[in-house]
Image 1 (cartoon, rainbow, N blue to C red):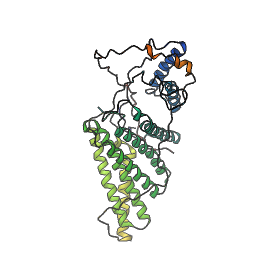
Image 2: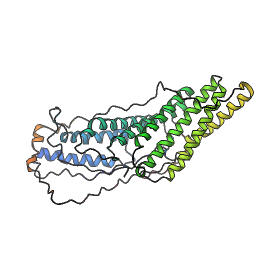
Image 3: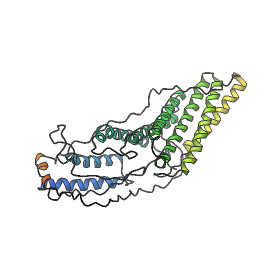
Amino acid sequence: MTHWFHRNPLKATAPVPFNYYGVVTGPAASKICSDLRSSRARLLELFTDLNCNPQMMKNAADSYFSLLQGFINSLDESTQESKLRYIQNFRWTDTLQGQVPSITEDEAKEVHRSLKIAAGIFKHLKESHIPKLITPAEKGRDLEARLIEAYIIQCQAEAQEVTIARAIELKHAPVLIAALAYETANFYQKADHALSSLEPAYSAKWRKYLHLKMCFYTAYAYCYHGQTLLASDKCGEAIRSLQEAEKFYAKAEALCKEYGETKGPGPTVKPSGHLFFRKLGNLVKNTLEKCQRENGFIYFQKVPTEAPQLELKAVYGLVEPVPFEFPPTSVHWTPETLAAFDLTQRPKDDSAKPKPEEVVKPVKEPDIKPQKDTGCYIS
């Protein structure tokens, strides 16, 4: 079973020892630094732990960020920043310079929810924290507005893919599936547009993925819209809609090949090799042949030259980011703890001597071996 969702490489981060010699003047401050080291190490370990589940990740993130809050916000809950706000710099690698697996219903719900939470985290960072950076994000870097926007929209689109797969399994009305597919295609188009002004050398692979998914779900929309038209005895229009589905499916197939041949960050997934992709091709072909047969025997309707306009609006199933908030500041942060950090004793930087650029080692991601492709069953 090959992968369906394209992923950029995990961001690697330089080690942060939280050693503030001279600044830390008491055991309370020393314990905070020790707890920060261990909680950060635990969180980073879970990123590549195949046994990690969402609750484990949330608990580890809450533990770390509750401690980190004392370095960010004032303890009196005012809008003032902590006096330690600029004591520590963090460094990460930059990501740019899937298959839908056979999963249980509970797993599908977890995937759906996790993607919505991810969208909410990106949105929260974009609106509440990135604007506060001392140095604005450079163009094309991960915290730059275009990339953050693309991540938000891609998370929403992929969550809606789970909704579509579920709707198909439950045999929901074609008009509902068509509308969801159309909205999902629009999401992918918006994400691609957000990256359109980036340097192609860095963004081409990611954009190929977004474009092929846009074509794939546009084909889905036209296919199920054709079924809706046929059910309304509009066989000529149904044929034209299916012909358009056939065209977009062929585009998606071609883009899958281009995507596989395009160099860029992130592992290459193989959507065209997945049963969920191939099933659409068969569905389009069989539905079109059925419409053409019925038009030749029953309806005798003219097939329009222009494809029908998809003006579909999903009434349910649309994904919105789950609002995100950092956990409350750890109870270990007290006025006495904060007072134990004496910034006047902080070693002065020797700015006259240039410092060598620190290399951040990439994250060694787990090698998940493809399993037998059994299709998309989530019921």
